[in-house]
Length: 103
Image 1 (cartoon, rainbow, N blue to C red):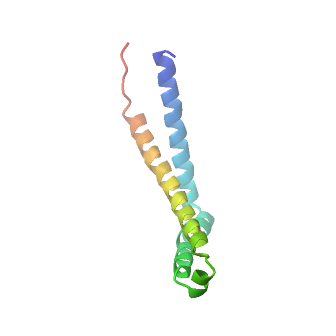
Image 2: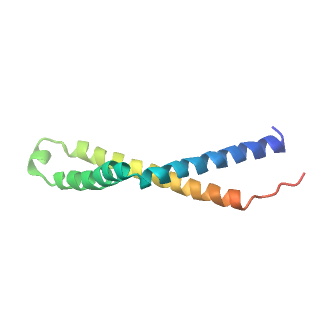
Image 3: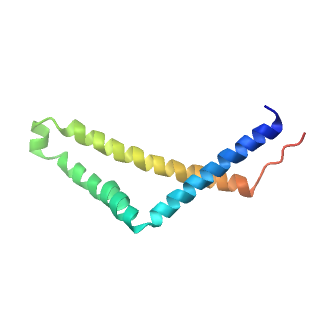
């Protein structure tokens, strides 16, 4: 792989990250996405699940592990979205401030 191939590969990866963050930004502006995912799943469902952890019936039935796993899943999804934002911001910076590679 020569320098041009490497630069092309980096440019493609940068562009993919920018496209991903742009897609996420469009989703986050969508009212249905806001309602179902950001509010319904990542906020309301987390609050509901968190309150269930203290429920005596849930404790007695040994269901706390299931609830904790659900909370971990929501957290993992949130981290995925944050990773897209971070990588997208970095890619935008790289595109705006390209590094020149001399022969």
